[in-house]
Amino acid sequence: MRFSDQFEARFAEMVPHYPTKRSALVPTLLYAQDEIGFLSDEVIAELAQRLELTELEVRNVISYYSMLTTRPRGKYNVQVCTNISCLVRGGEEILLHCQKKLGIRNKGTTPDGMFSLEEVECIGACSWAPAAQVNYDYHENLTAEKMDKVLQEYRQKSAQ
Ligand code: FES
Image (tube, rainbow, N blue to C red; front, side, top):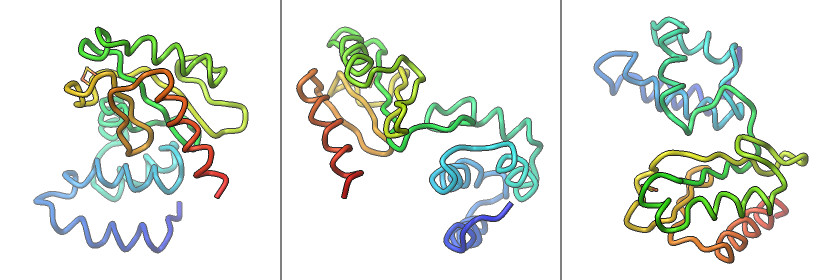
């Protein structure tokens, strides 16, 4: 398993800041996912060994965080919250709108690999519900029209 020099530099710089190696797991998983696109068996085995954890411990942490995935996703992962605050303010309608617009179901990926879609629990933006997260960006007070613009912006960004 070989990561980029940038990953290795970040990893080497980050780990000594934590009291134990295992404490660096979540940021390390995020860096690895950003680089590879998802957390493959190979990545999990490598990081478990580096951070002195079992692969099961690493998988348990991955399963807890919705932003971490062991499956390949689209370039832009659209996570639509349908938890209570978003639900009462139209979160489910936003999710259905995204399904229709992208032509995929929950946990699906568009054939061109551009977008994947996921229904998620609270993403901590309840005051600005309904909300969605695309990769690391938050989009709030969504309407169907606003969501269309968000998706269009990512399409344009990808074409640049
Ligand atoms: S309920 Fe949707 S962000 Fe909290």
